[in-house]
Image (cartoon, rainbow, N blue to C red; front, side):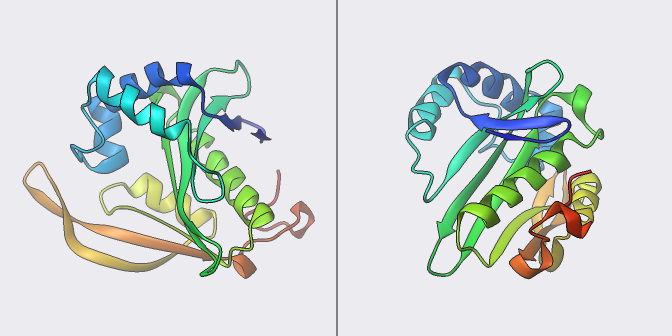
Length: 191
């Protein structure tokens, strides 16, 4: 378990499937998290149950899914994950989704991502982390940039939403760009 001021990341539990089902069937969550990607949602309870069978058996040396909880009341509010962890190349891909709309824009997603970055750089010999979003999700672009991720490229018009095309925006963060200790005062600092 990893704790910040607002959120904690904890291991996924079978009972979290109900939250995932609700989030992945919320059109606003699907819109902002994935630009309406039908692979994310809407989804059936059976599909979520099958996915959870796999997610509960993930090997943390390669990938993991965490539940993001609000620290004030322990309520599950989202999910964070890493995948494609390659210790030889020193890379991993990250993701975070806050599924509870009441927590949007309040820093919970940024803190969850910061906790995940701290964990990955602390636990593994990684040299870079990467993530992406779509260009219409300006809130995510700002949050990633504030945390120290740098835009590294775009896949132009790779996302189609409501008849319009958007770019897939790719971000990267190198280990030396992420302060290892809170005393440094950088993006990884507590506080």
